[in-house]
Length: 275
Length: 257
Image (cartoon, rainbow over all chains, first blue to last red; front, side, top):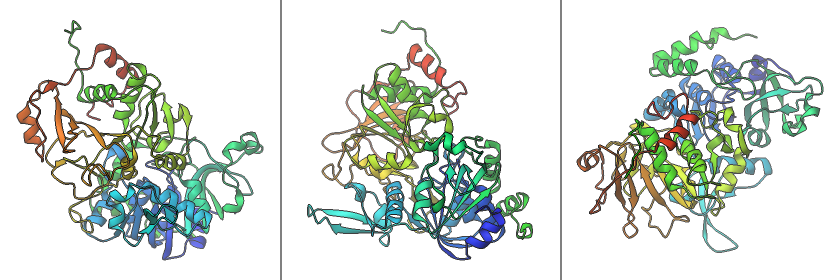
């Protein structure tokens, strides 16, 4: 249950994983220690699924050339700017973008978690170009109840989900602080779930606040304790985002050479792999 | 009319005051990424002209965050100091109902004359010249009561004849197809626009103090409808500025945010 980040990635994330979901939202609760380990081990994924709004975790995996295809509704850095590696990869057509919206992601994960064959979306969503840009993910059917045309989308069933939380107990029950965004859905829909936490739960801590223990251990494959492991993104309940650290990334990642320098300076070169 | 002493204000503060005046008591508003400006507008409205207004601060799920202080990121943990907190999946679920959200604050790298917004690819979809971040929840604007579009850039790259990709649908498909009221207001650093009820095209409404009609037309990539009489956007009152500065001690609205 408790593994190092090296063990967890080595054992549980096979090369060429079909669908890898990475949690957090914007520059908050990105499971960066697990993501850095993917970069170190050069673990490529066929399709990366982001939360409705992704940031550093997605940009780093894309910049490292580890993603063939990304299914996302947003990759950026809000007020700090656009995502440099995502831009470079998409603008050179080096990756395929499966443009989704937040409803397709969240309802798609519900479908994955609940065994639903597909999801029907509210009328009006067909007016955006999201569905026409991705005919392989969306279809139009006739609503059997009303006879109206209805936009439907595919379920999302990640092979592996990587998420972050504040703490976990010895049985893998996960305890959140602040917002948990779409992380619980990503866990419920996935076959393999790796949870990065700031620390082990203290004795009696979960019992004292059971309402925050919202991901039971039977849904968790492995827990990785990584204190301050979300930096430079925030960890709700522990620390805010490191704005100078994010700005430093954005500055370097403007060029492919700068991106490589960032990877090396931040301990993600293949030579940093430990057993 | 005003006897108040002229007070210096920033463009962000002017825009917040304009957006606040558009909101009505008891309405429910929602906003997404990079939304310090509409959040400040909603809080200002709650404290002045729209008591009982509700607002959901983007991905945080915070309902009526107290903004003590205003923060830059829409998922900042400090937003959870709020009247209530919904989970993000619950927020995204009820956005689909179509009868709960009165005001949807939207934006885009491209905004067109029909109020379509693009936060996705600019240029060819599969090989864009500029890959925007993505539209997150913008397809849901089609189900909101009214859409308020805001942009901190007013230039011909942003305000275009037709967006290259529709993230948030405006009136282009015809108002019949929209399940909500559609775009109602555009607020930029130069002016405000509303939409003509017959043609569903953007129409200049007010020019900000010191801005000329020629300047707006020069900076806009489509030809907005120009009404016979153009008013000047009202400046924020000293009371409004005092509230905004109380929320925003670090000056997010004064640094061009």
